[in-house]
Amino acid sequence: MARHEHRSAPPVPTRPGLHARRRRALALGLALAAGLGAAAVVALEVDGPLRQLLGLDYRAAGHVVRRFPDASGSDAEARAALYAALAEMPSELDPDDPRKVREGAAIYADACAACHGADLSGAEDWRTRLPSGRLPAPPHDATGHSWHHPDQHLFALTALGPGPFAPPGYESDMPAFRDRLSDDQIWAVLSFIKSRWPADIRAAHDRISAGMAR
Image 1 (cartoon, rainbow, N blue to C red):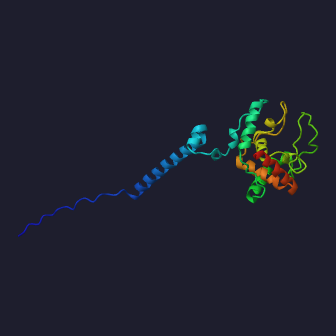
Image 2: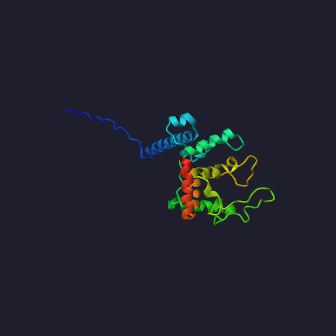
Image 3: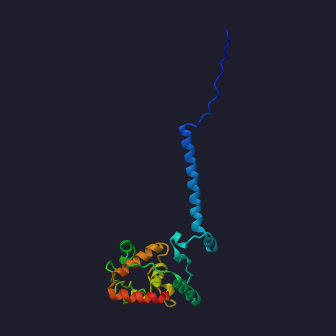
C-alpha cells in the first residue's frame, strides 16, 4: 500500500491590512503636506538674487511694494530711487474690469469711506486745516486731485502714505496700507475710484499715466 506524504502548502505572503495601508497613506500625505508647507514658507522668505534664481515673482507674496526704497524722510536720493522704481512698475489699474471694480468698492467702503466719503466727496471743508495743522481727507472724485497723479503714484501713495511725495515736514492722517492690503487689493480700490470719474477725467488721467510709463 503506497504511502502518501502530507506536505503543508507554502506560506502565502501576508498583505498589510486595510487599516495599516490607510495609516501608511495618511502618514505619506502628512509628510508631503509638511514638505509643501515648508517650501511655501521658503518661497515667501527668500529675497534678492535667490528669489530671482528660483524664478519666484515678488507678487507671490502679495507685496511688490515691500521692495520699494525707503523714502519716508527728506533724503532726495531715496526719493529718486523710489520714483525710478515706480517708473519700472507696470500698472494694473483697470476701471473697465467689473470684478476688480466690485472688489475695490467693497474694500473702499471698509477701509477708505470713513475719511474720504462713501461717495468719494472727501471730508467737509477738506481744504481747511484741522486744529492739528493737518488737512482733512481730500475727495477722490473728479473735484479732487487724485486724477492728477499717475497710476503708480496713486498705488504708492496708498501703500506708503503721502510722506514720500510730500514736502519735508509734511504731516498727514493718511495711513500707509502696505501691511493691510495686498497689491491686488490696492489696484482694485484704485480701479473702483477711477471707474467713478467722468469720461473726460479718465481720459486725462490715462494721458498722465502714459507719460509716467515712458
